[in-house]
Amino acid sequence: MNDFYSVFPKVIPVRRNSSITITGLQDQTIKPGESYKIRVLSMTNHLDDANSKITASPPVIQKSSSDLSKGATIRFDHKFLSHGEYSISIMKDDEASTKLTTERVYAVPADLAGLKPYKGDMHIHTYYSDGKMSPIYMAVTGRKLGLDFAAITDHSRYDPSLEAIKIAKEIDLDMLLFPGEEVDFPAGHIVSINASSSITDLKKDNKYHKTLNDIVNIRLKDASMVDNLTKEQYAHAIWTIDKIHELGGYAFLAHPYWVAGDRYHHHLPMFEQLIKDGDMDGIEVIGGYYKPELESNWLAVAKYYDKCQNYPVLGNSDTHYRSSKPGEDIYGWYWTNVFAKSLCKEDIFDAIMNRKCVACERPYGERFIAVGQFDLVEYSCFLEREFFPLHDRICSMEADIYMDMLMGRDENQLGNLKANLADLYEKSFPSL
Image (cartoon, rainbow, N blue to C red):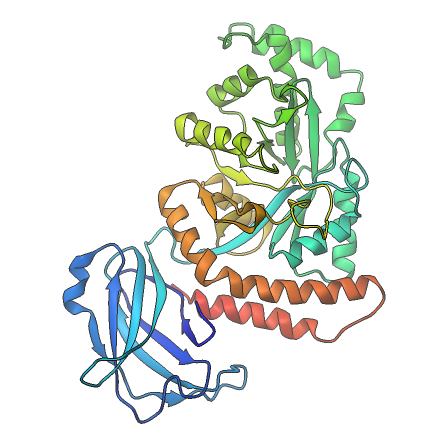
């Protein structure tokens, strides 16, 4: 992606004729009346090379009032035979075959056709627990960072997430928010997402300790436990997961290798037992750490590839505030890419449960890393270069307007930005 040319769609289905449009975004980049050739090369399958050169139709001036380009547009049809990334080079039809630019598109297989990428963070704190900012401030800040969905998950507090959802509706925040809570239990944390009420509040019931005893004496009576884990310890995790599920929520294990004080916060034999039993809905393998604690993420990633590949993986910031000082704020460093049919609750969680998600990180603004199934990681690398910079720019402009609205300064530009983002998705991911 560059500032001189645009290519749409960015994602096309394999083995189907697709129409590609490349537009010069500056004067004199592509000129009407001149002759051009196109070379299409698969990044992975060199056997595609034999059919790679195309004589494009004559360039035309882009007439669309919604397109700010000044240059002309080349259109051509092509069938992309292989799954993966392709390079598309535009060359002048002269003796030197002078190359103007090389753009990239991505051909997706059937299981990804019709799915769109959305960015989310489902582990966020506010001043209702150990954070510093309000729930709606953290939500709008997430939008500025390019998030499409999020959950406020204060420690043992469910109501802050509802406060964010309420105010988000009042300002028509262009973002999907889920109710959430970080549930503490002995030697562990589980993030509860989308449950209908607080899990922590249920511990105040007189039946809580009796239920734990029943889990130990009945459910775990004949269970095989990993070394160094008692049934009494494990019962707390089982109770928490059971209650989240009973309330229609999803239970994601938080930061398994977080260093708290002088040791890992999680009792790691419990993590091994949870992996073995399969009751969790997913694992936060990428989370909120600073250097030199990034090894906590590396250990979680290694465990995922060693023993947890049947689980959905999440990347969450575990942020507590937004700071303007470089290196002090991890919000935006860690997130999850989810490949879903649409940005609605049912489709997002259906995608996660079917492992159509990858955990992502870019700490300190450095190199991008994604963790998950290889095909989705490969696809995410393309999107991080070619799609999300455009997506995030619009989200950031939206968020500035929402911040003005929260301070009582209404703006009229919001509708245009929402339309621009919808148009970007439509042009990048056509009906496949």
